[in-house]
Length: 399
Ligand SMILES: [Zn+2]
Image (cartoon, rainbow, N blue to C red; front, side):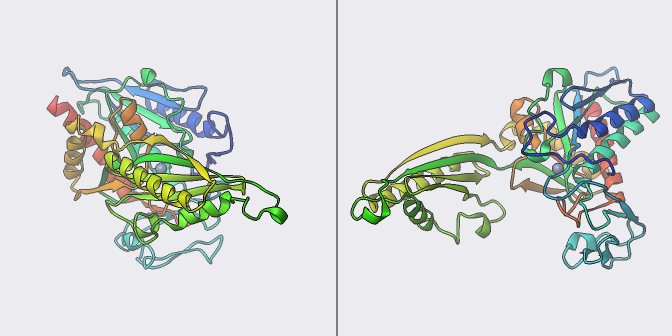
């Protein structure tokens, strides 16, 4: 937690911040010290490690993946992790800024953690449990495998990535180097939660063209692209089809950026749904509203460009039902009720799945991430370690 690994969306380098390699180097050293000989960090800051199979069976190579960087939304410098042993169920006041209080009233999940050991930051930074909880869980799993040579398992791959939080976590990943058949990211929240579904995502860029004229002499000449865009945005509903009015399985269209002058204006939308086929419907809807708007502004015109961003990993995971089924069995073996959920966003797993490494997401206990109230239960992390070990057991048994 104390190693600053904040990523930087404005940087063009890989990794985006050189300091992420400090954690990568430490992890490689610790893996080697514990007896995982085949561990290395590459020039882009990716950590690759492998633990060979110790069974005579042919078992697919399973990769466990977590990201090392922390979100740029909140400082990751001088993080002071605190352990609140045997949590009493009340408010947790963070000592370096007592106005920062983690309360069970605001965090209902925390209320269920009474009697457990809770890790928090000290009030001025994020904690970085997202996703250093995942990193720690995978390291502990590796330790278990090394310490228990009689525990039968197939080939195990370990992958720690930089820059997940800025959407570049797999940009420089070498799947050839990894040589894994299936993967699991350790980056979901509540105990027992399992995500095998993400949004499918497109972006739409609309460029409005107006007709410019000197405003003093513009009568019957000027067509202001800013007013055309405003009318278009206003023609779309706010009480439905918007992030602020949807949850669960519902998708949305969402304006995220607007920039321009009366002559020309660019407006960007993101389009989201779990059902990929519905994206085209939303785009058609936008297009028809746009045409209606343009009719009200004679002389104006617009370009409409759709680009693909990422796709629901379930499309790939449905082709390999064992990957999710075995994970659910492992969670049950760890004695935990399964909470199946869908990520209303993308994960590295969605990109990995489409690159050829089917990769759902398993719980770590990390909660309230990207802020000063971030926390994680040590007992949740231990259950996650058990789940990864059972998962290897299930793969070996069923192969
Ligand atoms: Zn994360």
